[in-house]
Length: 174
Image 1 (spheres, rainbow, N blue to C red):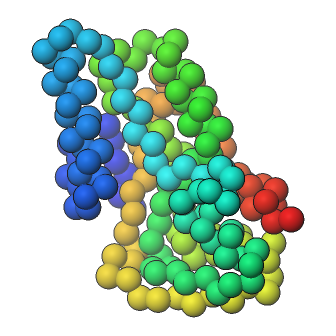
Image 2 (spheres, rainbow, N blue to C red; image 1 turned 90 degrees about the vertical axis):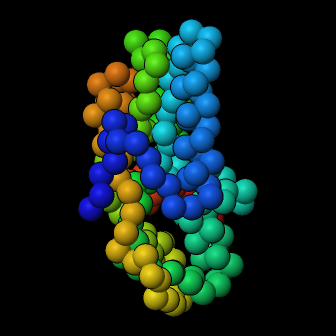
């Protein structure tokens, strides 16, 4: 399991991650050049939004399950650090009042959940869903937040993903 610390310089291997990295570097450069304090919150895999508009894997799977469509899982053992949207809102609010000037803070649960585990939670609510697992070259990989700073500076105790995801799925299953 790969836990990511804020102190480690990111080395993204995808365009999305590279854009996030460049944005952080620009913010840091402005800070040095203009004396502006900053707080960068690195959000991990956010869920909990309306699944009709969500682009995250949980929203996609939930929409498919509600329609009775087969779920295609590319990499059963790929894992993520899923954080509820309410916890990210608390992190943003906490960063406004905390002593976090010129810091990067991971916002995640620090807990690993494989896509196969996510499917098992979905099956509890949608027992008839069909699932097709496909091979993925990056199966068994993922990132988990070291969230010590988030807990300490922002006083955030995030919702555990297993309970939070179950509640979210049940809420929108109707």
